[in-house]
Image (cartoon, rainbow, N blue to C red; front, top):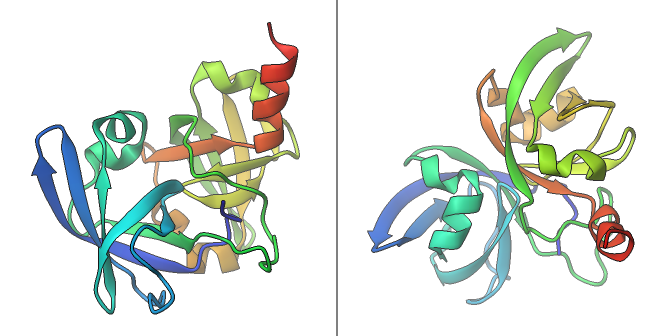
Length: 196
């Protein structure tokens, strides 16, 4: 589980194809890895991945064909920057919201505007998620915990404050950028209970 509070901006060092799966090596940026063990989970752009190797400042993961098909990793390139967060502990503060690292869909940016000190983003998401994203609800975009401003059909808007822009890769987003979206866990489980 994760909180959506990004701990560092990392970078893709290597991508090695292993048949239908890929091995990614990430530079961890300013995130310390001394407490990370083999098998631990790290959220990379909102995707929960298991560490299989590590050095002092990098870690490796295997990404399955299934995960590649459901996330933005299928189109990512070496040197691309990524949002990183270690799995939370039971003593962690939850300053964002509970995030599983299981992506519900890939969306893309359809509008970007400066509004005061913030950046306004309009995100188009898969229509199947429409009933699960609500105004003033929580959503994870590339692993960042954000509050939805408005929802209209299959678009939601968010405002990104300067601090978040400086600590995540959201500052790089432009029209057409693809993003990993995870809906709020409460909405996910309510749908299972209510919809027959």
